[in-house]
Length: 109
Image (cartoon, rainbow, N blue to C red; front, side, top):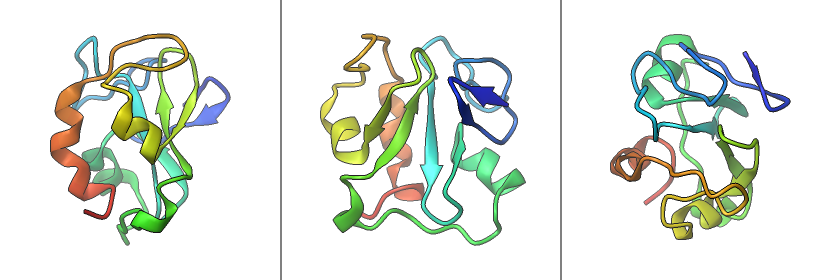
């Protein structure tokens, strides 16, 4: 699905990047997977439709844009995402703070 000009793969169910796994009002980000340079709504979507070679973003690349706000299409760097307090700095849409619990699937710790 094309969302705000970006291809988002997986079980996407709407234009704010929600998927069949995570579909609450605040579930509105997609994460670009380092291994395949492709946006997915969640790690489960990547497991089902991804590259079969998951790799997390290394810390030295946390200045790269890898988070897509489903509310407005703003791309955040990983560092920006970590410091945005679960709110898009552009459109002020809320992100699910629970996503931080899954960071090991996306980013080096």
